Image 1 (cartoon, rainbow, N blue to C red):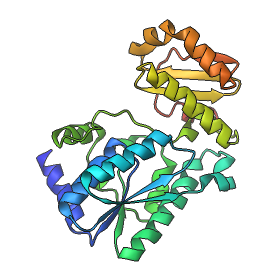
Image 2 (cartoon, one colour):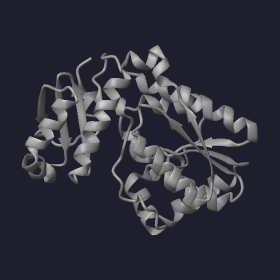
Image 3 (cartoon, rainbow, N blue to C red):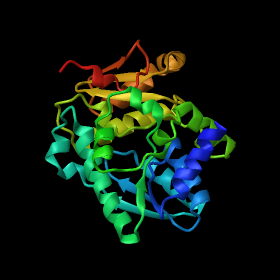
Length: 263
């Protein structure tokens, strides 16, 4: 790991300055920390504000930027005004990332900086249209370039004392909607509300997949008992949000489970 860390520091120190795509997750937080150490006065964090991201994530990103003492820009990313996104095709993430990082490049150009982001070597084992957009835009992904995997990022983040070293991954809320079904603000808001309610019950890793009128809850099998113990409260809350049927997926939490739906 020492060799990889040195490689990361080398990649960062060679940049004229960096704009870091900060989501509030552990990957982008560690990247921001390393960038700040390598380029103390030449780092800007940028976070997109959008209905596709839980409001708690934006708040957390703001806390991280303040904690690390980094200039932080928040901008409205505007996905909901783009038909290529809201129509929800299988390559939705490509169009989303293309627009998002295109905007970051414009911000970076004002300073003569490079845009960097926190995808890691573990992401290469999955089909991620967003990564193709990053490559097309020539965005720098230091963790990929240094062959750093997710478990190594968590280890480093813990060693650096970052508060979210063990924080569960939180991809955008649109990943809860089956491909081909239109994405609306109402849909995203009720997914966010459903997941926030489950988190209040101390369910850590959770997804509410929206198969209207069905809510398919994915949690770690170790949390099954917790969900079943609170099934009446969960059912009542989710029905108030507009779901008719509330189900618990016996396969448990699976990253990218909707990507497995038949084309």
